[in-house]
Image 1 (spheres, rainbow, N blue to C red):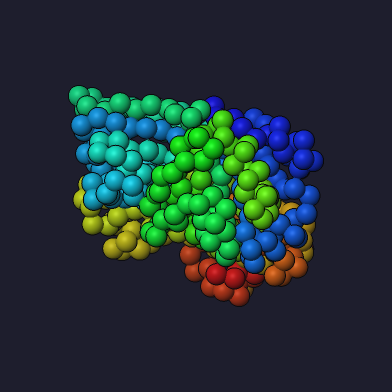
Image 2 (cartoon, rainbow, N blue to C red):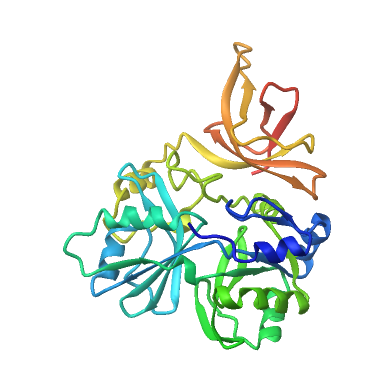
Length: 354
């Protein structure tokens, strides 16, 4: 299990933290409004040093991944990547991650905290006579994430680096004697930079970025941003109970590449529709946290019965609304903006935004 490499640094600085063993333990540096404002107007740095990393190498690595994963693999040039999925045979999301073609016959899977070993085990089930070696290299990575309108320009100036021009493209350099990889990624539903100089240089890289003006922040602001952008993450919003289209993951799978695990179901949904639910954003009438798993109800105008029509998966405070927002899976025919739901047993309500 990958641990957070900067937990002690954050604790010494007085940050708000969850236990080190939990995923993404950094919550905030104590000023959420200021951190959120910096994310919207300037730039911020997130600690993602507990993310997982798998390396797949061997002559058959590209073909092996291409026939299993939902998005393209073979067309990826070295230094490029994409968001990708490993689906179940029934077309539901088993794992959501970033795939990168590192060098010829060498691929990296960058995944959420604590998922590397599970993904490795899942892929290993499909290995037979393939020339493929899968290694868990989570202990060798310690990425930081930069986000905000000034992030790219400020990082380039502070670290004398080149910002990749295309999403999922990488640039390699050196920081304090350590190999530095910079990748243009998507975080919280918007473009960002992932910087990784390894565990030994992570603390110095964090401090260098903060000295250059990046505002340190954590999970609270990340949740606000991604809920504003209707961006699902695992395991909060993405589980094996959902199809990729239900979680709005259309850019993470291909409809043209041919067979892969779950492909027939994904293609059928694209052709015929018929999704029973879809992830939506709703505005609350209060700012009290709403627990994951809270049910959403609407009253049937014909029978006056309250129908269970939605399930909350994420909550965050919205500075724009001065109230809370949630992401929730809503049943079809109840997803129109303006639709109003009772939250749990009420009397609070939530209104669909998009």
